[in-house]
Length: 240
Image 1: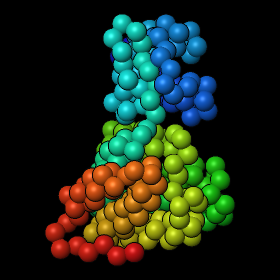
Image 2 (image 1 turned 180 degrees about the vertical axis):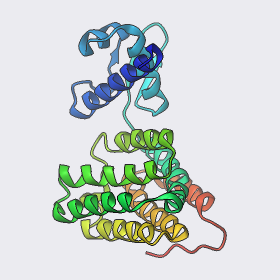
Image 3 (image 1 turned 45 degrees about the horizontal axis):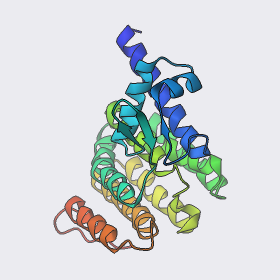
Image 4 (image 1 turned 90 degrees about the horizontal axis):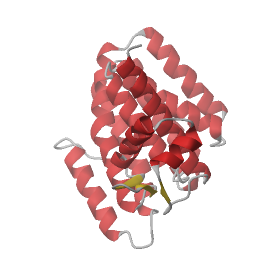
């Protein structure tokens, strides 16, 4: 591994650790942390810490304050809309691309993760871990590893404060049906159907997340609907 690759790997590791610390409350929202303080906490020099903070700032988790450090934000209502919009713009076409190049091994891996989700339909940690792996497998099957890594960060950020649509806002059976439709379309190598199934799943889940982000969310819902209009192919009707 080159020194540049090693440094990038270290900053990614620190970013993941900071994200986990925000999730568990070890790093509190609204609090300003210096790079030195975070470096001591996570056993890293200032350079990978700063790079990690820049990654997290891009995701809206922290705000960089010049010469002071980073203030923990966590996703707010607008952040949820932006993250969901990015997933909607990226994942459905990647799903269609994956259908064109997938192998029987990919089919087996997806079927295994879907089976775990069905077996662990209590919406517990194992269910969500399998859900995350299933989406990651599809993105990696598309051949775009940078996209897979980026979307993984989006998903982890959305889940930071428990804004998981299952089972809080929709039955686990609905989510399982959506995932089953995606996997079946991919198994048939029907890229159009796979793209449509992924888009339907993402819109259904995000509709619930955005609607339940805050009490005063009419503007956020309107903005989210605008992004749906952008992402929907001309003439396609979305039915649930």
